[in-house]
Amino acid sequence: MINEKDYIKLTDVIYRRSGISIGEKRFNILKPKLEVYMNKQNYKTFREFFHAIRFDKTNEKMQDLLNIITINETYFFRENYQFEILINNVLYELDRIRAIDKPIRILCAPSSTGEEAYSIALHLLEEKYLVEKRDFEIVGIDIDSNVIKKAKSGTFSKRSVEFLPLKIKDEYFKENGLLYNINDFLKEVVDFKVINVMEKERMKSLGKFDVIFSRNMLIYFDEASRREVATTFYNMLNPDGFVFLGHAESMNRISSTFKTRKYGQNIVYQK
Ligand SMILES: C[S@@+](CC[C@H](N)C(=O)[O-])C[C@H]1O[C@@H](n2cnc3c(N)ncnc32)[C@H](O)[C@@H]1O
Image 1 (cartoon, rainbow, N blue to C red):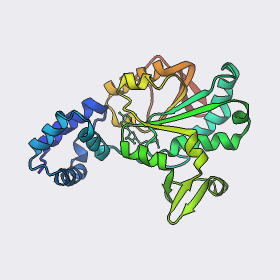
Image 2: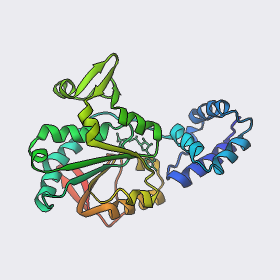
Image 3: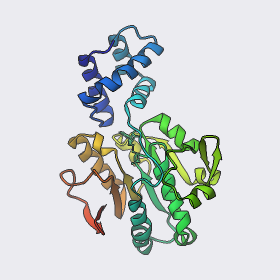
Image 4: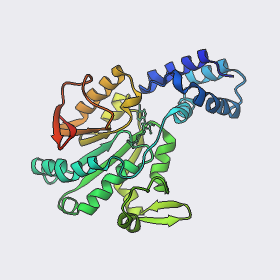
């Protein structure tokens, strides 16, 4: 039902909406998924499907499409050295320069199913000193509405909790058959929302942050979209705020406005 020409038309619409550059390589993987969706929705031709997406007033069809094409791989304590730098260095630096009556605000953009945002909360709880001293707010956003629903549910697979120390798994999770439920109070600590990082006004409506984690999303963007997002992050940060990127990502070539800070071999960006 979908040929390569149709696929390119779709990838173009997706790129303009989300910044995601899907590329031709994923055609064979996405074609059957898109066709299953088209059948379920009773579209007889690609033309009919494409028209519905382009003239979708409710945004539901576009949301379905985005939910199909996003890659949501994540797990607890992924690239854990970055959480350690956050807790042992960055937050102590911020604690010294931020008014004590103002919360330190951390954004995970994108959060996917929530493991990254919850990992930050777990590290903070384990560190104890900072959470006892002052307030923190953690917000997780993602363009995919399915992953945000999952993040809010706080239910995770065995694979997702695989790298958690046993002590943390025992203390903050309940086994539920093959799944793990995070404790209810942790679900109240993190605020999850469906937001596209390319929508500047919605991003701005989240307010200012002290730290932004943006790991493993910019790798799916082209350089123009990466630049746009880097500027959005810069504008959303309080003075001296920090950005953590994934290990395969860098601000080189996309933004010269951030200072680079080195913690051991690792780079964190600062406003
Ligand atoms: C591989 S996951 C990364 C999750 C987590 N940060 C990590 O590193 O484990 C990438 C996520 O980026 C999200 N994403 C892609 N484009 C986005 C956009 N324009 N706005 C918000 N989220 C987006 C996808 O839906 C997906 O859940």
